[in-house]
Length: 213
Image (tube, rainbow, N blue to C red):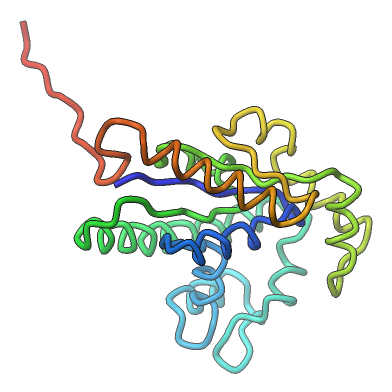
């Protein structure tokens, strides 16, 4: 089964691209949505986050604004949070991949904001990076509640630079010139990936073992 990684910095239009892929009929695993579910009431991460960050759980769910106050700008706190969330997200991702292998799905998409930063690209056959000009990115982000130029600058500092993501990408999906060009690029990426020979990145194949001389 082929695995396409989908990523892009904040405000670049990744969620819109993921929605397009779903409408085309391809299964998408959304890492952000998984994190959200893990932190809602009854979520698998709630107890561990409550232990690591006392006071952020309210009515049985993690308060994202309160948690954000604890980890934003604090690298050590962010690492503690990631140590809780990343293994749980990976477990959900593996379950998603297994389901679709059993169904005979030809291609799936892993929608991961920090794909390169967490070495998620190593689990993919190819990576599509959604990108737009920096001024348009800023316009989109600053329209969101609670955002500010200072906060955007801090988020950009935590993420891999857009130019570096584009350098590493197999496919670049432009989101600054309307949905038509983005959809066209996505379709071309899918055709290219599906035409590549070989079984794909999932399931992982065991490395060959060599005997002693």
